[in-house]
Length: 235
Image 1 (cartoon, rainbow, N blue to C red):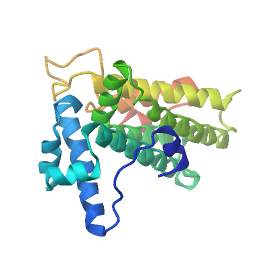
Image 2: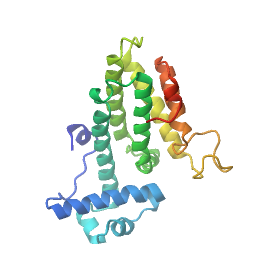
Image 3: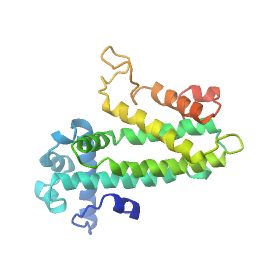
Image 4: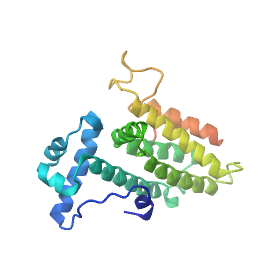
């Protein structure tokens, strides 16, 4: 775990030294993400996680001690993966030959995909924060990393953009993206964005229009001209 993540959320658990123990730990984390996504944090029981992971309840308690420690570790792991994913996503060589508007569309699409896999834990963190806890705060470090990476991306395109303060522009663009993602996660989906039950005032991430419209909004804010390619589905 990186110094950044450790400074945000230190979680002490029994170390997984042997390969078999590490595999069990990985299965429990994947099971937790899946169950929280399906049922919400409050409805997930330790026995559910153990069953989904193919291990005993005793194994869970040996590793984590309680459900809250498990959630904290799952949260810290998600933050760690998020920071690593941002650095990989914004690697300069990845976008050298890609037009700015198309690059932003593809970046937002990748961010949406990553968020979709973890939106259950985002919602759980928000819910726990509303109860006086601070579990959502670690995600601020993912946003800070994303803002810094986007600012570097924008500076590299300085010849075609006229941004007096790339840092401020990147920070607000990331806030726009995060706001749209979180609102989508908190909005109950009917499964079919075209159905009568869907909430028609909120685009959801399972709607093809979500990334398209969000990309157009971010490009407009940053003053990036859009081409016909970005009017369709992101690559």
